[in-house]
Length: 232
Image (cartoon, rainbow, N blue to C red; front, top):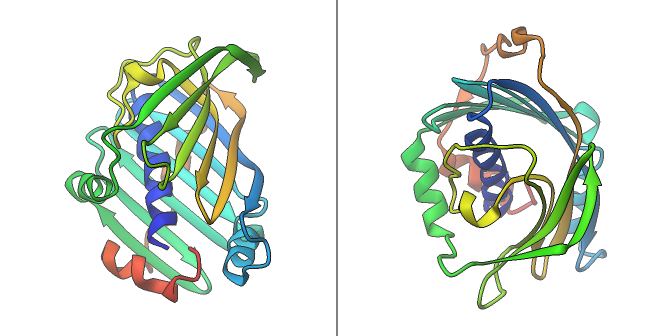
C-alpha cells in the first residue's frame, strides 16, 4: 500500500505544481493499460480489479487544484485538494469508510525523500513522437542506476508551457514539457499506463464545494498500514 500511495502522491503533486502556472483548466486521465509481472498473484489481481476503469479528473485554478479519482466502478473515490504551496488534504471513501488525511508539504517531501532516486537519468527520444489530444509529444525515460525501483516513461509535449516548480524530484528542466501520458513500472510487481483523454480550459468551479463532513481523520502512517499490504 505504501508504494501505491507514494505513486499517487507523486502523480498529484507533480501535476498540481506544474499546472499552477496555468490560469484554469480541467484534465481527464484514464488508465489505459495494466500488466502484472505475476498475473496469478492474488494481490496483483486485487490491485488490477481495484484500478480497472479508474478515471482521474484534475481541476485547477491559480490558487488550488482538485484531483478526483474514481475506481472499482465508483465504489472507491479519492479527492485530493492541493494549494499553491503544495499542502494537501485527501478525502477517501471506500468499503463504507470515509477517511481524511491532511498532508502538509513537509510530510509529503519527507515521504518522497525516503524513496528518492537522486541519480535518476532523464533520456529524451526526440525521434520517437506521437500525437495526444492534438499535441505533438516525444518519449522521455526516467531511469535509475540500479533499476530496482519504479521506472517511468513519459510522452511529453513542449506546446503546453509551464513555469511552476515541479515537486517530488521531477526536474522541469529535465522533463522539458508537460506529460500527457506516462507509464510507471514497478519491477517484480506491475506496469501501469495513464493517458490524458480530455483537456479543457474552463470548468464549473462549484466542483471544489463538495461535502467534507463525516470523514474520520487519520495520519498517513495509519493509512499506509491499512489493508495489511492488500495492494492499495
